[in-house]
Length: 231
Image (cartoon, rainbow, N blue to C red; front, side, top):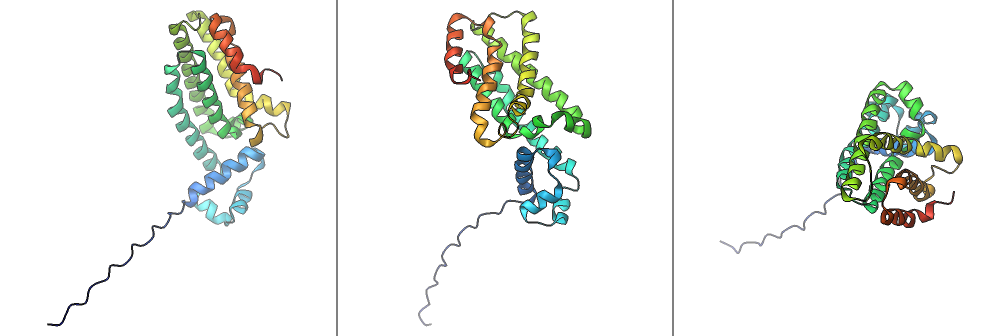
């Protein structure tokens, strides 16, 4: 038998990056447009044009605009489900500051919901019912935050104080970006304004606690809130 010919091993093929699914990309573009222009001002035709796809391709994945809204809202709910339990670990004012910042960041990421909240609730049955759970879960998280501050001695709160205080904080959390928008409709909800807007929101939410805080926590809150007090 003749000498065997050595078999050359082929070079491993480069792993190709898996393209993002069209449905996910549609949601990303829709979220960007809704946040920038407001949901009522964005049509499915505009979304398709922004993506460079046909309206038929868009309708294949999302046959109605409400399905886009509901899918984005579902993402927001999942984000809340992951974040809100962290309120149970709050034990001091810095923990509370961080938690509220993270919550405001999530709200900012889906700010179109809050910018056009009343309009969306009047048109979308799913949001109308599910936003009630959002408010309830936020209130429970804020109550857990207050309980943690009370346990650690950072705040002196009674049960009678906690319910109206948590409700006031949830109202502020829910409508702060609407307030920012009314103050400055042309710029308030632009990405470049995010840091200042979120800081002001966290400052005002926590400032509701000021009468209940111990002296050291009051001083620390003054320090944390310093850059956001002048507006």
